[in-house]
Image (cartoon, rainbow, N blue to C red):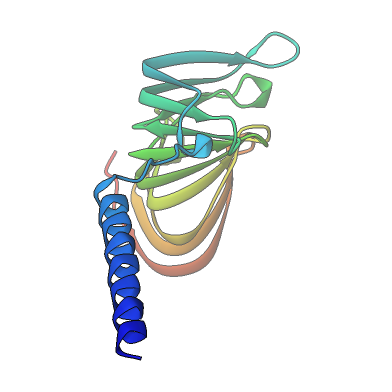
Length: 188
């Protein structure tokens, strides 16, 4: 029996050693990383300037950005420091919308984040500027909306609130929650 135990012990020592060597060698080989196509942009543009026209040939909007990355698998386009110049219907004065970050979806909706500003180009407009951290813009309808805190700056007034819908075609604004207003006396 001593001989049988000895052979069994030698067999298990050899098998254990071989297993240990195989595991050690597999641990030393780095794993190959697979590249996920969804996180690789199809193309990248820097210092982007693009004009988009309506079906009848008039200018719909202009987009400028420091950098743009298009991800076809996700159906999104990321922008760094985008600035949209929106041309509303009926030849109304243009509006400029800028942010630090933007995401354009295939349904022509843009999510703008971090220091978003909506500015009137018409000096006579009662509403001059809207500021916030987050806005959604529908490029088909020129409607901006936000559910977060916003600041509205106009001629002789400033309004702080939460939640806003602005139709840039008609200059109609709906404020969801009013926080405070500051009115200035304008001397003529």
